[in-house]
Amino acid sequence: MHQIVANPVDAARRWWVLAIVVAAQFMFGVDAFIVNVAIPTIAVELRASAAQIEAVIAVYLIGYATLVITGGRLGDIYGTRNTFLAGVLGFTLASLWCGLAQSGPELILARLAQGATAALMVPQVLATIHVLFVDETRARAFAVYGIVLGLAGAAGFLLGGLLVTMDLAGLGWRAVFFVNVPMGLVIIAAAWRLMPSVPRRPGTRLDIRGALVLFAGLLGLIGPLLFGHELHWAPSVWLAMATGAAVIAGFVRLERRVALRGGMPLIDLALLADAAFMRGLCAVFFFFFANLSFYLVMTLFMQNALHMPPLRAGFIFVPLALAFVVASRHSGMRARHRGTLVPIEGCAVQVIGLAALAATVLAVNASSASLLAVPLAVFGYGQGLVMAPLSSAVLSTVQTSSAGAGSGMYGTTTQIANAAGVAAIGAVYFAVQSAASAVTALLASLALCVLSVAASAGFLLWMRRAGNV
Image: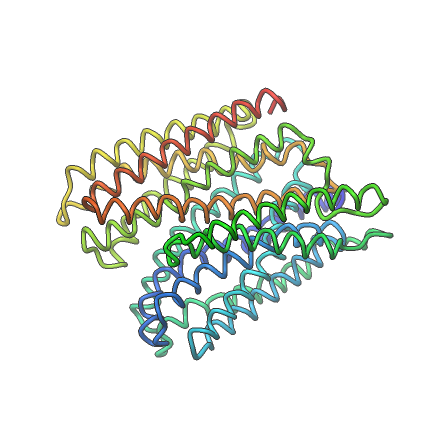
């Protein structure tokens, strides 16, 4: 998808295209949160074991993370429109399959299909924004993207609780998957009509061998991270992770050989030599390391230690999501003038919010737990200051022809970080809870989140020196 904004009509239409792609991102974001709320009901109705329930969440991340770079590269080869349409159609059908599943193993397979098709769809979102908005509107477009991320989180928590509680048409938990079907069909119709069609780049094809090697390497690295706690971190888990890391190192050498032979590597090797981009990916890793893991430990603490029902816990997260939306809007305006200083400031606000949250946790009990919403909102505002400018800054040095590959690497980094954070911080939470108390476990987890956010800020400063962004 190369410079499709060539005339005033296209310049106006790009905002409609932005609405289409961020709607798909919204659907993906809601799905990431909505399933967690429905998990207890799913476990009872399908008589799923604890391992199967973990797999319902984990294989979705595995399917997405192991294929998202390939999905990004397919967008570079076949055009973002074609790849996006294929991804949304696949995600919609996979959601329908999830809702119709009759057993735990069938639901796991359907969730794997959901994650794999999301890997086609999601990279085209950032790639489209990166290519379409190259002028002064870029920061505003990424701010819209950040707002949608925040709304997706809030909608996921609330919609999941409402759909399961209301039991619409007797569908129960199945409604959390069926809700994607009409939304997906609307997105497909709008994208078919409005997204510009880009012809296939002549003489290009997917590096199949590279895609398979990368899939194997990421599977070996991410799978053990997600299932390590269930397997009690046996030596085989660490061996699998080491093997996965070795395969990924071999993948880089393989890609260099493909480039020397004149082929098109799965990743643009120039990206690996881009100091600003690589330092930015490190900042992305540490930011997302403290992202999903934070919501995990907070949900565990509120529901298990403070005995909150899921719907009340969801409402306590709403101020966080709204603050995230407000901050995303503010960050778009400020990033035009201050660049990466805005997400660095956002990291500082997150640390303040985490410190205030730790102090509040020591003071509240079940009856006063709603007070947690205040420091959570501060933390959410800091996240909003980081999220949209971070993706814009990290991708700012990526060439248009590699927008899909760069977005895929960004997406893979976020998922590896989410998985690693859930594994590491989740393990600390459970270990400290067993040895001491839930409050002590949460405080230890929050301390790790602070260290991770601080590391993200450090890499942002380093990226700023390399890329002047």
